[in-house]
Length: 345
Image (tube, rainbow, N blue to C red):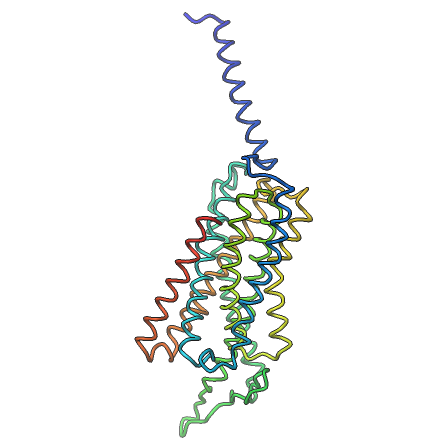
């Protein structure tokens, strides 16, 4: 028969083990984990290198389609442009599925968060779904507003090209009106460019903030390489959309500038908040997790609906099976390359 003294000893052993587990969780959630890679002094120069290299990569990526528009082989009407854009669209799609969405799942299912409500409901999937629906609403309503705004006559390309007729042509007898294809397509390109830029800016700031606040030299090195690759080709996709929107030079430059500086700005912001921002604290996990989920929904919608589906169902690709196959290969290469980056970042 077990004595009261033995029961008391067993009770204290269980209580001490439980206390150690609780303390370890609190320490894990309240401070950075020291795994041998955490070094604030060594991390600082890496972050400065990250700001410079990512900025350069972003500028090259987003400006490449804009500065090469005078090269006949890379004009939007050419097959090579379509293939490169398909590759960049695959990059954007993989960013949403393989980087942003899994990060949100990890953050919102962390043991640092309360069991109720964060472990009782799949917030990541729900927020991503709502974000995709809201993006659809913005996409649809913005297109309607633009169409009504320019419904009276012609829409003039801001780059100074020839006006595209939006006015309608009357069909004999029935009086039905047919909208000219070119003008409607130009409106869609402008809406797509604006909405895509918005989604990219949101998730770029979040990525930069996480990198800037981290002092883990092992993860920062991999992140720099992955983000340079990511920003360059994501910028090419956005740059292609900006080019097709035929904006004036000032608007093109403004959109390219904001894309280029958002991730470096996020890194600088993370550096400034490094003393107070803890990436594994409950508040940070919830905030960044929800932002990642909303960004994932937006990016996945834009990649599938406004970029891939719009191009593959368009007249150019529908008119050539050979070009479709090349574009599919480009999409798989882009998505595959970005998915491989998930191994390191």
